[in-house]
Image (cartoon, rainbow, N blue to C red; front, side):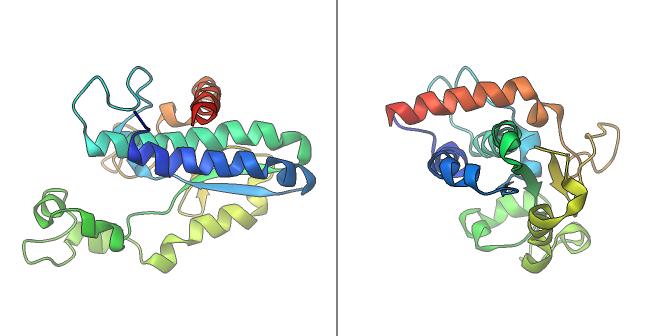
Amino acid sequence: PGWESQFGVNHMGHFALTKALMPLLAKTRGARVIALSSTGHKISDIRWDDIQFEKSDYNKWKAYGQAKTANALFANALARRLHDTGGLAFSVHPGGIFTPLQRHLPKEEMVALGWITEDGEPSEMAKAGFKTPEQGCSTTLWAATSTKLEGKPGVYCEDCDIAAPTDPESPTARYRGVNAHACNDESAERLWELSEALLAKA
């Protein structure tokens, strides 16, 4: 069996590309690598005993959450590997954005999520909290250039700033902050080693 598709596309493909670029990154002082995670990481930690959903029914949202957690952990582990070259790696949440990606979701599901109304228009929540594509790229650009991130390797960023730990008591906990499982050093190293093993078998 192959890799679960979201884990493969969102993590393993990027991991393989970055591994191939490591010699070049090592020669480039101050290089930065930005991994696009999302608040979706809150949905699921890495499913260490069943990453490929071979032992349980497939759940696309848990698969998405796992992939976004993998993006954050990847940046965490990569930052340590770039340290001696002066390189940095970060993960970012771009914000909620309406993009062509939503074409893969049924209207009923987007209504249930509170993103759109029954008429197909953006909901009040979306109007208040979603970003335009232009606004959505701002945190990625900030992470690639900001001097504020010097000496802060591997952190998770949102809204052009370093994200605070998720406050479970906050009404915005679903959408803001970073969960502990997505910035755990041991998990990051475990995922890196697992990814190398999976790549070696590809």
